[in-house]
Image 1 (cartoon, rainbow, N blue to C red):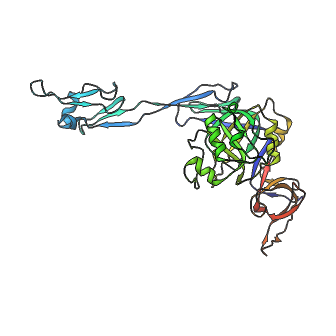
Image 2 (cartoon, rainbow, N blue to C red):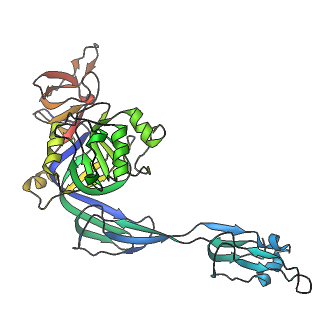
Image 3 (cartoon, rainbow, N blue to C red):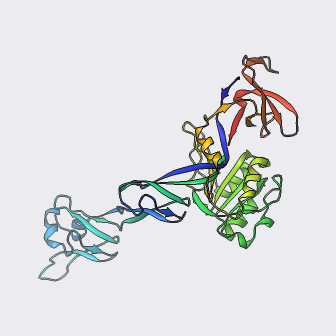
Length: 375
């Protein structure tokens, strides 16, 4: 049988999902192998050193740097607050003394008789790593983090912004063609992962942020609406660090595009379950896709088969999405996979495949113009 390979988006009703949760610097891991954790459980914690604030103490006292150490009222390791007197000159006959005061809260880290500087270290910043998904701890890396595993439904999107969030999955539309408008957002959606089939509007995003929705998942979004939400053009970069108070994921692309029926039906079947989402996206080398993960009560036998499948394999019957005009966004299945290059309408030769669309029509497109919808 003719075969080919192409990148693709995963849409799996059941698979085994593993995620590594690591600290940015060494710290304490709070879980053990075999523990069951919820998405919001803190599995590891560490502290980052605070900022350094220099104080020109000798200059403030009007003395040479070498005379500073004996004039210090606070020593290395002492805690100070803003405005505390840390050093004081001898003055004249005990009068007219000059003071050097702390410019920040923190701890005195060093006192230099060479430069006349006092360095203050600001308070440590706690950093906590949460599980992200409900599942079982299957591996622990001492002082680094842990690996969480769970049977789950798993969907990759095309594009997203905002970081990690989680909440119950709630439907805001009954059909994959219905746009997400502000009128579809209700107070009951607070803390939820809300999905709709069509385009998410700027008004709907604003309403969702006001209510406290954790995340929005839709088929598409207009570039102008995204710019309104972010306050600037996104450009080409890695997303996921935006502080906009909500995570946004689109499964199909930019514009008024309906969510793929397969994806929409899968989400509808999972309504009410806890979903974990991450909007991080990178479209350059080392592609990162936004993800929607919905842990399941049990993993079906289909998950075992999916782990043994070859990623990116195309064959007759494979579900694909066309990602170039004139059929951009259309979904279907491979009906023919010629071995030899064929002539395109432009007259050039290319490796092609034939796609049977959901409406029954068949179109021939270059293989580079499709992406695999992996299950």
